[in-house]
Image 1 (cartoon, rainbow, N blue to C red):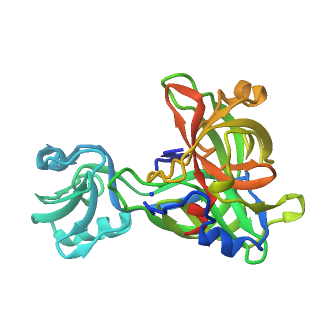
Image 2 (tube, rainbow, N blue to C red):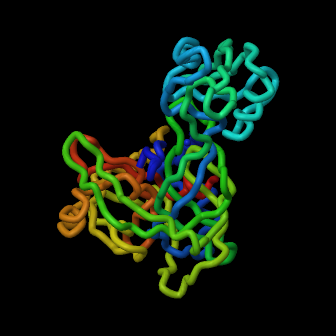
Length: 335
């Protein structure tokens, strides 16, 4: 759901759907067949720079220094440039600090969607002889999500169904195009007031697709090596055909095999601007026992009604993990 760390936290294509009319995207795809998803996949996203995850001290010949803390940096800041040099990786940051020779440099730092110029003087660490500014950083985030569909003819897929960056933050980019099959090895159950999450392992010898695009409705790319013989072929249906009542989701909450679970659609909102076109409620007692309802990692789980793919799970209600939101399939297909 909105977390990567399995986390990924949440990336806004607006698409108006007029009731009683069939959206052009769905009309164009009406003759196409889609493999039903439900399998979990692991992927890597670049943080758009060197993201600070914690501050530290630097031990030098003349004592202990805290350059980053003294400069006003804090966890969550992203170093995007040093002077005129863009910074996207840890290696680039280290190289720029080495070139500084201990002279003052100016960092371009992004925080909460805003950029700032931060002067700072690197300190030569006594033990390593390297110039440091007292930060612990990362340049990539790994996460898992659920594949929603795969086009039968082209192998193109859509997953997640929601943003994969914090609000007002579009820094995340695809860092590694490989998409790995992910095995779910455990579940932190969702409870009232606390979202649960799937715990998964990347099967590094099982690349199944390449990622090409990350945007407001999820992650997209193309499958390259996967056995579709056990996958169900389905038609798609627009939001105009969705009704309040019984439906089904396909998710993987153990191992690598998707299972079907019963839900109820409580509300259909075709014109929602936040990709929250459905309010859904998990009614399947087995899923509730295993996960508590909807948990992080289930984003992208396909929603079927009357045998047709109508959307994907996207969010969970914190005050009730059995309830959540879903996006209409035409909004994902648009991307």
